[in-house]
Amino acid sequence: MATNTTNYGLTKPAYSDTADIADINGNMDTVDSEMTKLSNSVAVVEFGDTATQAISNGTYVVWKGNLYKANQAISSGATLSGKLTAVSGGGLNDVYSSLNSNLGVITTDVNSSGTSVASATWVTIKTLELTAGVYVITGDLSFTSNEAGIRILLIDVTENSSNAYDNSVLASGRSDLNKTRIISLNATTTIYLRAYQTSGNSLTVKGKISAVKFKV
Image 1 (cartoon, rainbow, N blue to C red):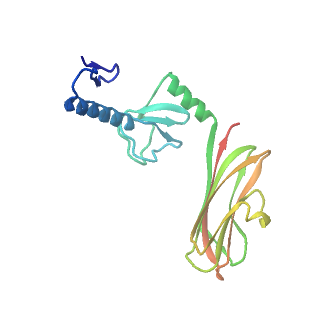
Image 2 (cartoon, rainbow, N blue to C red):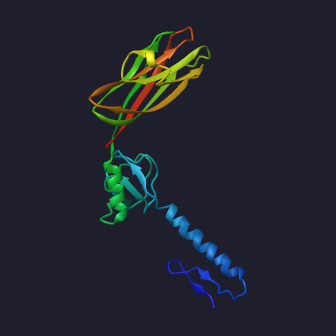
Image 3 (cartoon, rainbow, N blue to C red):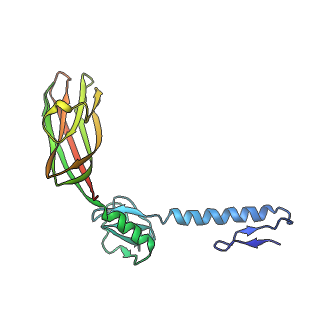
């Protein structure tokens, strides 16, 4: 005689039962429905005051170190305040709180107007001053389109470019470069995002440098 699973009531035929396609299809429909509910309620992480993506009603959201549940549909770019309900207690909230306590604030500086970089010349595009700690640092550079020569993006703790090929990304003729480094700092330090190119002409370079601090 067939029995049912405890949580979702899936049909479990007995060994003496004849296979029934209806039972199999019914189990599949239940699994599909429950997986859809799960995928629609997974947690997203938000650091700022506005949503960086559309969030469905009922979705769990990790926001500013705490676990919340969206109490309405939230469109991308909308403010989060008043649209999230705090989830109190429970192991899941403890896990998220512990994880977030080891993740520091994201620090970002952007050069959106652009800086002129002469051919065969190193130029600092942006800097970040960071306190002691371990960081994941990401740098982005966007060069004026020009297919000649090489491009180098450097992330370093000094404006001395002698270590460029250790801490940089090099490409020929590309317009956009990206580099990520993990850096451990023992004291407050200035991090430099630098650009170099050999197109034979001056190129305008825009850039962004971001750092995430981890507590250890």
